[in-house]
Length: 317
Ligand code: SF4
Ligand code: MG
Image 1 (cartoon, rainbow, N blue to C red):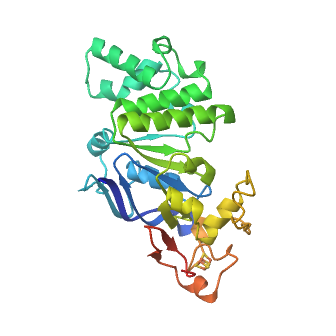
Image 2: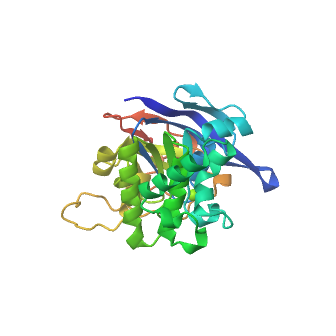
Image 3: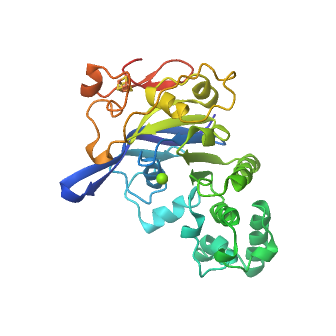
């Protein structure tokens, strides 16, 4: 497997009111291989969107490194570096409407990256727009309409077409179906799976619940307050979750057939997610963990491999 993206101890801190520091991403090391999907799961506020935005260099990292095809891209970002990166990594967002310019036609939205770079002739541009529209399940008639004329699912398709226009290797999908009607979610999910196969794309798929990433991820990283607490292949994680937080997340998913998944332990999540500005010392999960011991409050657990590439950060292992 060819590594395409790697982060090393990546951190993104924000200065907030009162001289505090918000450690949104607090030391994340992950890899993504060509043609594979990595699911990033955690409650809102765990730093998964910030991680995505740091990788795509909307933010400069506070510390740590990002390697794309082995090349360090973590230096200060400029207009030029962002423009170069746009050809390799794109992002699609939870609310496609918020990031589609309401005054631009679908054609102009899809072609914006090309137009900025003066890439194609008028005929090529038109042909390529139609190709992209067809690829995402829309058609030529949609090209000259405006975003408000579309349904939520169609807007997400436009967002996907725009992301594909630069022929990226990686797409960071930030909760792309969470805002859509349940009936539309599966359609957009199927489209993403189909595109991944036909275009050999790599995905980082961000979601707040484990059932959403199950269908699309080869590997899954569970995040809590800016750190990864568990990482495993899809099969291994769903069959054999280890971290108390991961188990609690599983308990939150309704069990469709209790006989099939009867050994899934039921652990309720205690209390609220602490503010990332005042994260607990030691293990960040210790305030909500049913298994917390003395050491958990003092010492952050290190990530340990427990076999099969399965990694857990917890003093129980
Ligand atoms: Fe719970 Fe301790 Fe493991 Fe943290 S390190 S998840 S507090 S048992
Ligand atoms: Mg988010």
